[in-house]
Each structure stands twice: as structure tokens, then as C-alpha cells.
Length: 172
Figure 1 (tube, rainbow, N blue to C red):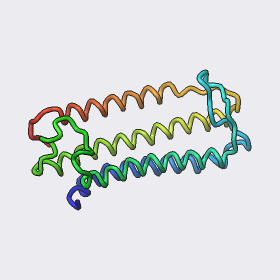
Figure 2: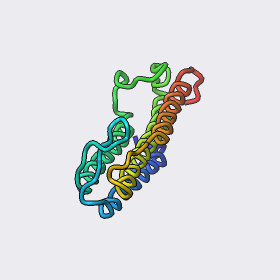
Figure 3: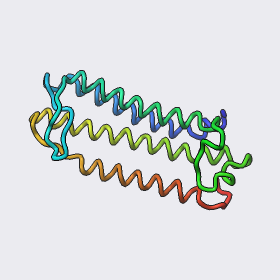
């Protein structure tokens, strides 16, 4: 387990930095927002739910904390899971005793980087909400570009996992 953790420490650090950036931004924004702010936007981008900055900041911090913990804990405890709980292409090959540690570390590194991307996506969504509330509370917002980038990162993550673990090439 110690060897496994040493292989994923850099990716855990990147996830932690993304989480810290997200939490710092939420904390910074709370004092700058109006007393009543738009926190939810309908399909057309117009606000349809309002709250206080404290409620917004608390909700975003909880959301970011859950995302951080989900990605970190799954990655940390992945080696302890039985093979039946791990779904990889060619699972028997990649989880054979001589390849298991390296394969799981490789998967966890990609998974943790995807977690960092997820937290950065939440940061950009929060930023769009904050900016809209600083300019005009009734201003429509657009998260088109962050959504396109996050969708592209999701497709890239799936592609990397499938391409990395689809063959029996022994390069775990």
C-alpha cells in the first residue's frame, strides 16, 4: 500500500491544489456578493432561485468537499477493493498479482486528474454565478465553454482508460 501511495502522491497533490483553489475562491467570493443573489439559472440562463451569499458559499463548499473526498478516498482505498468491484477492460490480465499495483496506480492517477478537472469545472461554474451577481443579479449566464471543456475532458478520460487498459501488452 505504501508503494501504491507513493505512485499517486503527485496526482493527489494536484487534486488537493484544485480543491484548495475552489475553496479559496468560494471563501473569497462570499464577502463580495450582494445580500440576495441568484444561485440557480434555468435552461435559458435566467435566474430562478435566490439565496444569501453564505448559503451559496456553504453549498458550494459542501459540493466541492464531497467531490474532493469522493475522488481522493476511492483512489486511496482502490487497492483494498476486491477484484469484483473494479471494472476494467481485461480485468483479469491487469489485476493479476504481478500487474495489480502498477495497474491500479495508473488508473488512480488518471482518476485523480479527472477529479481535479471536475473541481476546476465547479470553480468556473461558481465564477460565472459570482460574476453574474456582481454585475446584475438578473443577468443571464452562460457556462457553454466550461461545459464543452469538461465534456471534452470526460471523453478524453474515458478514451485514456479504454486505450490504456484494452490490450494485453504488459505495460501497466
